[in-house]
Length: 146
Image (cartoon, rainbow, N blue to C red; front, side):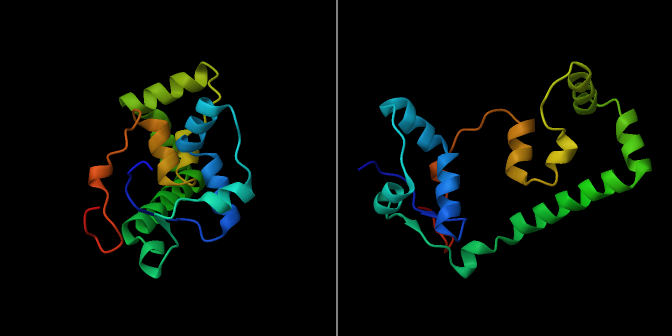
């Protein structure tokens, strides 16, 4: 079996775990390699034992929760305060100029401001370079390196 860092589920319900698994890079790699799919029954039977159920500590990440709340507050301010939106529309920084250009070119991407309300991972994926997982930087629930 391949060695990899231990994980903790972010989702509490098993069906949610399965849905997230179907969106994962691991599942895409499996499909590319074997030209096959995995159903929920097989997923439940063979889920990796290194992935633990959430605990009270793992379910509440104060930094992540704070970031999500801050992003939602920014989105609400942009949506409901025209003066803020006008300032952003008149901004000539590289990011805002590129966003306006993409909209003018008819890009079907989600607007970066809409992504503020959909979680930090989606915002990062939409606005940053491709990422590469760094397992050596992972820590377990007690904060010790894996």
